[in-house]
Amino acid sequence: MKEKRSQAPLIQTKRLWAGYDAEPVLEDVNLEVLPGDFIGLIGPNGGGKTTLLKVIMGLLEPSRGKVHVMGKTPQQGRCHIGYVPQQVALDRDFPISVWDVVKMGLLGCRGILQKTRSEDDELIMESLRQVDIVNLRNRPIGDLSVGQRQRVYIARALATRPLILLLDEPTASIDPLASQSIYELLHTLNETMTIVMVSHNMDAVSSHVKSIGCINRKLYYHGTKEITDEMVNAIYNCPIDLIAHGVPHRVLAPHAHEEREKHA
Image 1: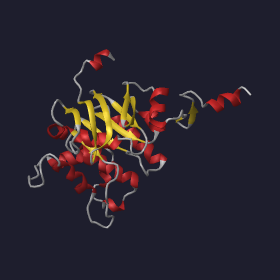
Image 2: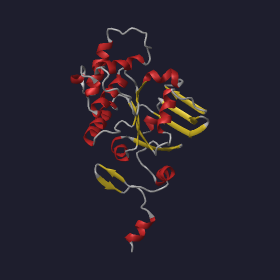
Image 3: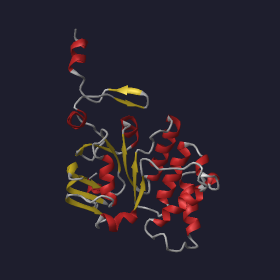
Image 4: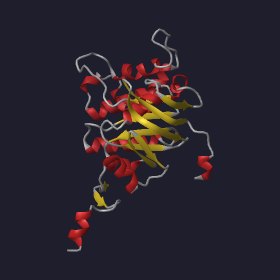
């Protein structure tokens, strides 16, 4: 652990404030993401999870504080990031193939006017291999299941061979079996890249990531997998139970009324 913490952070925020129309959504956020991390960020709707990803990507300017990606500004460093947004607008009747969707991932750092290169086909094919959908490459994306489409969007994010993968609710609206498949894929990808994932699914976060942060305007993150009373009370104002692998596990102090009933 000490050896890991001695590495230079890939992403670093210091006393970060950000929001919309002068209304703060993030307050005094400090975070270091190190090589090999797989961080899960949980919190309520409107708590700032997606906003933090947008700031890291350089899509939203902070009102205060500093953000660095690979030691550079977010705009300069984001070519090292693969991003899978929470919701992808899709016209199911639009005739675009899986191959062409993944190919679009190459445009982010090149610009739409730059010509494709001979090695681009291999980059696309390798991205499809990584998410195990080579057999779907010629299919219209509108014909795929939600879980299959999510793999396509992950492949698109991988097309530029990023060092960092940011995912916003990667299993939203996906059935449990497909969700498990996505998390197994992310576990494999984490062997070669750093991952930051935001999710409402505390079960999945507790089961699959290496460390957990709780965010509701402020970020509570200690670089471990432990979710403390302080962290959860701060973001939910109520103790909760986690369900891990389908089995209830008490990880926080019970409600006061539960203790009274237990000893009644």
